[in-house]
Length: 120
Image (tube, rainbow, N blue to C red; front, side, top):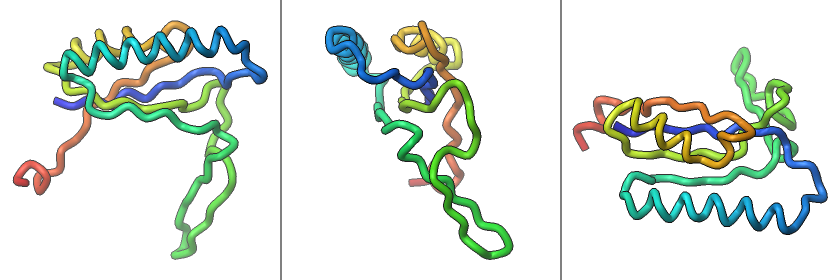
C-alpha cells in the first residue's frame, strides 16, 4: 500500500546558517538515497514557503483565490513523500527516519486507489 507523508515544520528563519543548511540537506539526501535503494520511495517533493501559496475555493459557482495558506499555523507544509509500505507500522518506521520528524511532524496517510485506477 502507498502512504503519503506530509512534512510539517516551523518556518525556517532567514538568513539560515549556511553550514546548518548544508548539513540538513545532506542528511535528507542520505535518507533519500537509502530509501531509494530499498525501493520504497516513490515521490519526494519539497515545497516553496507558505508565502507562495494560493488557496482556491468555489462558492456559488464563483472561483475565489486568495494569497497564502487557508489557515494560520505555527508549522507549515514543507514537502511530501509517497512510499510503498507493507502496512502502517512500516510507514511509521519510515516517517521516523525523516529528519524533520525531530523538530516538526510527519502526517502519515494511506493513499486511496480509486476502483478505475486499480483496473489500469
